[in-house]
Structure formats: structure tokens, C-alpha cells
Length: 248
Ligand code: FPP
Image 1: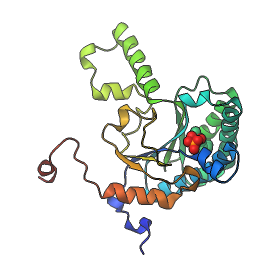
Image 2: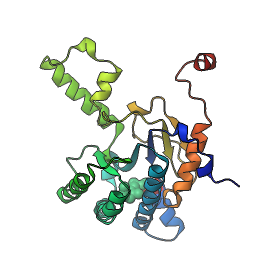
Image 3: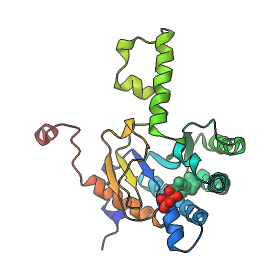
């Protein structure tokens, strides 16, 4: 049987793929391990998917690594996740460099521990001139935070007469979001059989194709990403138009 990689149409690669990496805890439970072990194995999946996305020419990959709501998890788990992030960044920077990957982070980074941010910025800086895949980590992120944050900044700019209320449209609003530099994702993937958006990119997924898989995140590999992309490529995207309008 042809692999999913071979079935991908190289002329229809989504520019931006976003992933909700879910199911680490359940993976650990099924393997009789503590939750952190699931997160550790999740890092392997991140590596494989980043590699795969780069191989087929995806330009932007946004991973939901830590949500605003995740701060409410038990302190030990939050600390373990922060530790893992630093560890993963330190261990992977060389190979990200070799793979021509850039790194960025979006989210309410203020509450992040200083050493984590320092680490992240160091890595970002080293990778900043790379021209391949742009890996975006959503950290301390929520879609509602993003929209509120943009709204506050717009309100400030209206108050200081930098912009006129009448000029607020889709493009202007988008330019105030944390994702201002990237196109809206064509494809959003969620693992672990949950059918929710969980406060991830909200504004940005207005027309995204949604792909759900039963696989738990620690079992997800690049071949699964390729499968999702083949599925995406076989869909008809209409953006509210009729089929006739699309083909004419
Ligand atoms: C969701 O699983 C996953 C997370 C909250 C964290 C994701 C983090 C990683 C994969 C590791 C670090 C990331 C990078 C980018 C190096 P869950 O714990 O909610 O699983 P459950 O729903 O089964 O409990």
C-alpha cells in the first residue's frame, strides 16, 4: 500500500497547520506510568511532527504546548511541563538548526518562569535566520486571551487617535493578534478523540478544516500528520461559497 507521504499532493500543502496535542495523561495511565512520562513521550511526537512538516514544506506549525488553563493543574505537573520544555529546547536546538527551523512563541508569556523564557529566547535567537519551517509554540495561550489582548491594544490605539473606529475590519483586527505574522491555519488537528477546540486559536480557525484522530499524542508520528494532510487535501473548501462559484 502507498504510504500517506506518497499520496500527498505537493501543490496543495497547507501553509499553516495547528495541533492540539492531547492525551499525554491518558497515554501514561494506559502504560501504568505517572502523567509526566506521557508528556516526556509527547516530546518524541513533537520531534517527529516537526521533522515531517519540514519535509513536505509546511511553512508554519503551531503547537498548543501549554494553555492558560493549564496553570491550574497540580503544581508538580506544571513544574514538570516547564522543566520538560527547557530540556526539550536545549536538547533539540542543534537539530532544529540543522533542519533550518525557526522558533517563535505566542501567548501570555508574563507568568512564565524567567529561566524558561530566557531559554526560549536564546533558542529563538539562534534560529532566527533560518528559512525553513516556522515552529510556533503556544505557551500560556488561550484564544480568548488573544482576542482580549488585541481588543485592549485596539482600544488604546483608538483612544490615542492612532486608528479610527471605522477602519477596524478583519485584517486590522488580525494584525493585533499574536498570530499577525502568519496566515490563518488551513488545518487544525486534535489528537486523543476529543472533539473540542479548548480555547485554542479561535478567531484564526474560522475557515480551518478540523481533523480529529483517536490516537493519543505520544503515539502520533509524522505519518499520522501526512494522513491528516491527505484527508485535508481531499476536502472541498468553499469559504461560504457555492461549488459552482469555486469552479468557475
Ligand atoms: C495534553 O495532554 C498535553 C499537554 C497539556 C502538554 C503538551 C506538552 C508536550 C507534548 C511536551 C512539551 C512540548 C514541547 C513543544 C517540547 P493531557 O495531559 O491533557 O492528556 P489527558 O487529556 O490524557 O490528561
